Length: 166
Length: 175
Image (cartoon, rainbow over all chains, first blue to last red):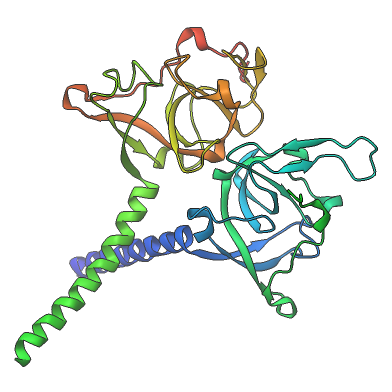
């Protein structure tokens, strides 16, 4: 009787480990479903939207300007941020608002990216904490699943003027 | 003929079953628990690679210890290089968030480590591409904690978390 229970427990543990490992490989190397919170990516992504993120671009270093990425927050490694890539390494970024008379530019250093939320008025992003290392990027968001009326591929940035022409 | 074909199909089924169990478990173990790596370069001499390019040390990297990004001053850690995401670098943690460090060769003489960041340095000052070049690094880039040297056998040892006294931060956040 005890041997039966022990056998069943071990079998259950074995299956849990096996499926846990398959889940880890899927999330780490392929992608997964993510729920976003916060207003910094409105109108593209609203609070409590569910999106699909893929991790292949990160592993093959295929992240491009205009992609929406999930990254680890530079000041809190346990939380994630969801922003759009405005500049890659070497790009020139305008760090002052267009209404200022004297324009202040800076270049994105090697190995870093410049992120900004689509909701420029309500977003803490690279304009506040500077460019973040590429190694913090976890994945690329490319598809929205919920709410159903917005189902489909995500639209382009509403702030096209922020992208450099170089 | 039918019997040999049946044998092949059973073998194939057993192989697939084993493959889909063994590969994810092995990959998860190497990503989440521990792996080994060969150390290259002279930036951590004399703790690692004292023989230069003749023999490279092989270290045991422990991912499990840093799963909550908890490191102590003096730990030897591996992290994703902030200048080149394809490369991992291995350095010693000198200071944690809130500490003030006296830098060597950095543009500012004193630097306060921001929240969520750490200051890493190689033991071989002057031959090390570390925080003195690229500043404090985010804890999110932490990869693993190097705990033991596994190869060559005469260098089997546990790596101690020792902070050289001349590199103590001038102000730690606990004070």
